[in-house]
Amino acid sequence: MFSTIRNAWAIPDLRKKLIFTILLLVVFRLGSFIPVPGVDTETLRMLFSDGGLGETLFGLLDLMTGGALAQMTIFAMGIAPYINASIIMQLLTVAVPAFERMQKEGEEGRKKLAQYQRYGTVALAALQAWGLYALLLGGFGQGVSLITNPGWQTAGIMIISFTAGTAFLMWLGEQITEKGIGNGISLIIFAGIVSRVPTMVQGLYHSVFTDGSLHIAGLAAILIVALVVVGLVVMMNEAERRIPVQYAKRVVGRKMYGGQSTHVPIKVASAGVIPIIFAMSIMAFPGTIAMMFGAPLDPNATGFWAGFARWMSPNHVFYAVASFLLIIFFTYFYTAIQFNPIEMGNNMKKNGGFIPGIRPGRPTSDYIARVLGKVTTAGAIFIAFIAVFPMILSIGFNFTTFAIGGSSLLIVVGVALETVRQLESQMLMRHYKGFLE
Image (cartoon, rainbow, N blue to C red; front, side, top):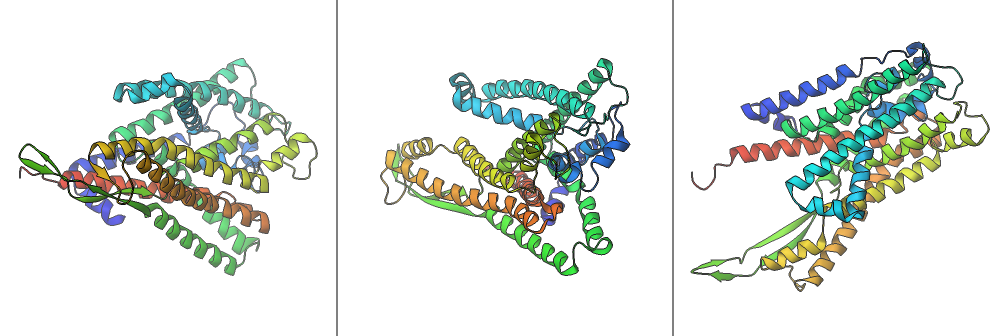
């Protein structure tokens, strides 16, 4: 990876893209420290301290925003509204024929869909900003207002600030995707998670050398497991199932075409980190609703919303099971959007290609669908298990620090691999001289 980055830095065009990407990520981190006016930050910091919001319902959102939620800055909502709008738009594209036709229209149709997604992001951000203001007004269900000067003017300023922050993050992500290197939205989430690494290391140090809740042997075991998981994630990201394809010879005029053998690669983790990001965004929503209805932080509290809040915290069995199922669902859903076995079979038939031992046409499409289903199942179960395994450990050993460590590790490794892969493809394009030279 480091050699790829070093080689890319030597190419002026790619160096500009890398610098542009880094500068926009720096802007994202700077914005994560600009507070929204009217918030009692000291009381909020106490709520997000050990055993509080940071380790229960809102630890997930705080991780994705790089700590912006705990400090209640302009980027407190992060990019979650954009992700939710993306999920809604993809579902509508499948369900609504008009959106499906737009997607098939080419570049112009995709631009219209992207514009609708931006409008949806702003609408969802405004709704979520109002909900966040209500949470602050009620002290996240603790009965103590975190707003220093409540009123409609303060509410308007805070809602506009939160919404504008999310809209600006959306613009940053699109600019990185268009003019930089990698997927902008994924890189913003990546930067947020990586920025929390020092805090996680500090928490580990405190657990080992201060309060003694974790022994040296336990720390060594955690590090070994993390290295093994990183190796497995890299291996699964690079793994693929290759379907052999043979092209028949055909004569066009005085020339003969075809006759070569190739393959269709189907990656085991073809959906990448998208299912994990989608599942994390969906699972963060019920906890927010619970807090809006006054769910207390006390684990021994009684009542419907208190029980609901416990169920929706990362260190509960229900949360782990729901996350597991959601990751599998979104893996299948995103793979189904990316791959169309019928279209692949028809294109293969038009170009004179066939899979050895399989008849062209419908049998080829059915064969590709079966292979795709098996490969997707293996990849989905692996990704879901890695994401949920730390939650299971936290439930068994009552150690909440790593309850969401699996998902964050998958996102960091997956985004890093995808960015390096894009760098390699960009370098390949620039080093290819073409047949004229």
